[in-house]
Length: 429
Picture 1 (cartoon, rainbow, N blue to C red):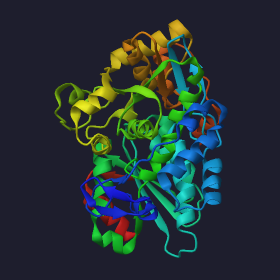
Picture 2: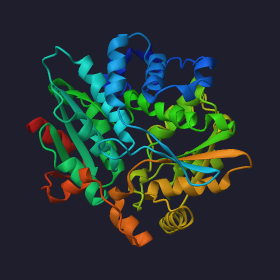
Picture 3: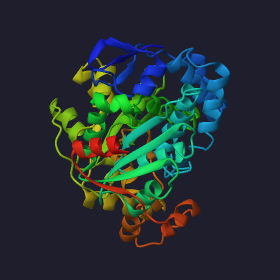
Picture 4: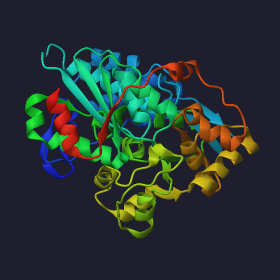
């Protein structure tokens, strides 16, 4: 399988180059040169397959023969060893719970898969690999968990000071070992810009073997496409048209769903559910993409003003806005409406949504007759415990894996939101 840069289709890479570089040399994002189509027999029999079997077949289609079959099977079975259950709220709405992994967030799928794949790629190499990643919330915890104690790999995580929940911060600042957290005095967009500048810095590349675990890396999107098939499988025998509503920040999750559709997933359409950082819903309405500084909200993982993966969505549809509108509907809520959606889901259905999932849940009010709506619940509500408890007036049970973090000591490097500060820190180590 070959991959090309979104900035220049003539810039090509194989899988290892695409994964280990993260960004193309021209700063574009890598896309599969050809996205194949799964056999109709595979789609028809999804309900008979395990999650791991689905992941293996999808992996083979997107990866080709660059990874031996036995190795690929091992990567899938070790990375995807937790479920993605569908929980029905009523006859038309169901939650696809993606928080049953070790960090209690959907990004466990991508982080664990990527860690296993990268470990295989660097086998036998002497120069350590440095993973540089920006997080608006859950990416950091998932990457820290997925790469913890992985031989030959160190992880440096940039996160915006005061803009992630307390438990999210503890997940990425208390592990130690090969994980280092940098607390940036700025926004997620600042963190993301600093990471991108680091990849373009030739002085750094001479000192470090850099790669990224953000959704700019194609290895994150491959496993994220698995759970769309897994969710569809659980309603397949109803014979209804399926709509996926996706909480969206950097738009990697939605891009993975659209890739799944290109591979044959029978999804009727997708809803891009955002908070007031509604850059993509505005694009779908006006045809104009207008990135800007992000605004802070209670759904902080979606506080992104310039979503990186938007260029991948354009590539999937040949930059045809009308074609994109046929498959994607935009939807957004402000904080007040998000809290109202959380209360509605709890009062009407007894279901506790985190702030991100609540926006996706509410978007399903737009369903047409005969459609089965599936909204993605991307993080355990306890990760946003203050917001959830304050909104719903209840005590939220905290899983043991989160509860033990409360007593741990935070360790982070405080840094201004300017790339020279990151560059100087890296070069001084």
